[in-house]
Amino acid sequence: MFKLMKSKKFVLAMVFLLSLVLIVGCSTQTKKEEPTQSEGKKEEPKKEETKKPRIIRAGIGLNDKHPQFKALEEFKKIVEEKTNGSVKVELYHSGQIGDDRTMMEALQLGTQEMTCPATAPIANFVKEFSIFDFPFIFPNEKVADMILDGPVGQELLDKLPEQGIIGLAYWENGYRQLTNDVRPVAKVEDFNGLKIRTMENQVHLDAFRALGANPTPMPFPELFTAMQQGTVDGQENPFATIYLQKFYEVQKYVSDTNHVYSPFVLMMSKKFWDESTPEEQKIFKEAAIATRDINRKLNREANSKYVEELEKTGMTLTRISDEDRAEMAKVVAPVIEKHKEKVGKEFADKFYKAIDEAIKATSN
Ligand code: TK8
Image (tube, rainbow, N blue to C red; front, side, top):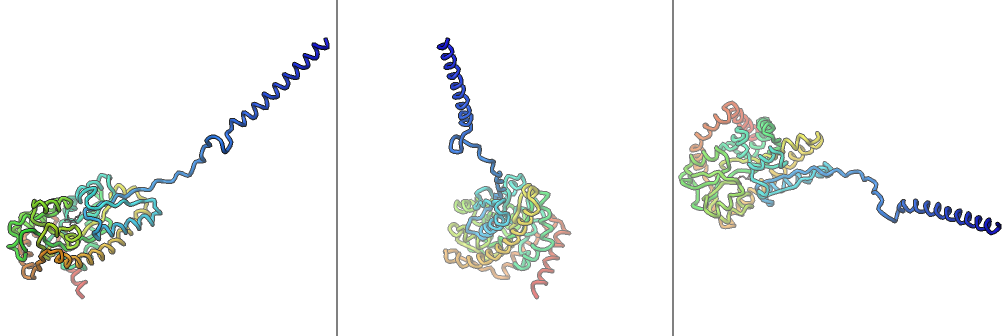
């Protein structure tokens, strides 16, 4: 009996010990289930989601040496600084993402946010813009600035939103000069039969036809190859473009025709604009105005500097006399009358009146 009791006690003690081990084991095990800091993956505390920046894709047709691109780089700097990086600007030059017309269509679709075309192709969207291409309409840059930055210039920009585009500011392309690879052009008769590339704009086509040339409208990115292959004999653009795009490599002759003062319009997709806050819109507008002045300064320096540089490349520069330029203006006058009707006689008269007032205001 004593043995039995002893063995009972032994068994009880063993059961007690065993259960003790099990309890302790489980508790350390449950502790084990909670991974220690050093073991196993701990859920990273949710970081405040850093918001992705909004992207502006800004494309132009000219290359990255041109004052237009330099001013765009300034625009990028100002916008990224003032929005503390919540808006990023990606710059594309040399027609990398399209020509003036296709990039404007991309703004309308909202597949691109900004571009800066010459006003000539804008006339395909808003017909009144073709008034800037009336030959010899601006006597100098001071008058041009007053018109562009004044009420009548704004009246034209106000016609863009219904086309899905916001016109932020007028920048400068500059006075356009004729180049060709056939002969020096000094007088009206020298235009005869020349195959001249023009922008996609009816006033340019009609004016060069009236001068006796054979004009072809063509997007800017195709122009260099067309001159290289002789598809066209010549083109017309400001001196800075002729030099910086190396047209002197495929053109022998340049004439200071000054036949049209060509503005650019720095523009934004209305879709992107409408999705922007009032603060962002204010930043875009102020940056556009600040860089307009930088662009005009750089562009004027470039256009006066490169006319000499072009002669150093071996191009023959022909200076047009006042008499011959007056003769050219006479020949294209009927084209202007025809297109005054197209843009609307009332608007055209208002525009010419504003020019007369600007001439008076700038000549004292
Ligand atoms: C560049 C054009 C160019 C214009 C032309 O995209 O097409 O000849 O003068 O500057 O806008």
